[in-house]
Image (tube, rainbow, N blue to C red; front, top):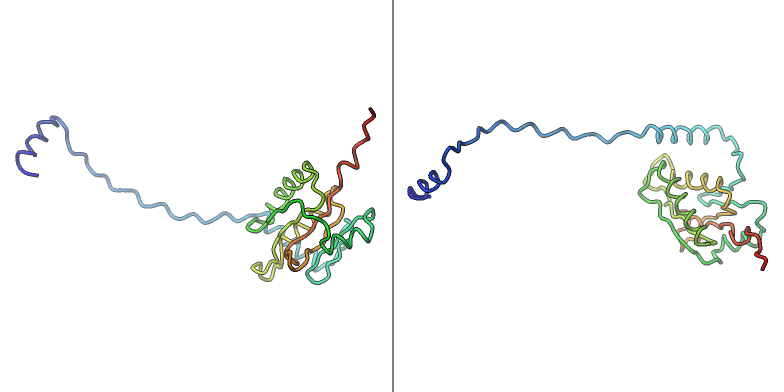
Length: 186
């Protein structure tokens, strides 16, 4: 900027003073993520139950290796075999990867509610194999299977075939809402 430009600038800015520069505040310290108290309690409960070996008051789940199998008494063996061998069309799917143990139940609740409203008969729940869970094992799988046992509309479930996700996914047979409706008289 030459002298003439400075003079013009000062003329255009009468009474204006340069602001004092105050020292900038220090950058805020990075916050540590909060530790979920309930997740720790869930892990402790899972550990306690695995050590105690107490039977669940829910319908039996057969855990053979990594496979999950569950069925209510009202489901015949041939229907259950068709579910295990994936002979039903899958009407919907939810992927639980990335969720915490506490987030599994709300996600499943919303998904199953929508599946029942759309009259889905079989859905797939992808929970993963828990390979990155370390010594804790497949936490999402455990939480999902326990929740599904408590849902009355879930008639049966079985681990998927290897090509459909294997022990990292569950095929779930849902109650047919149409069968529960009274027939219309007309």
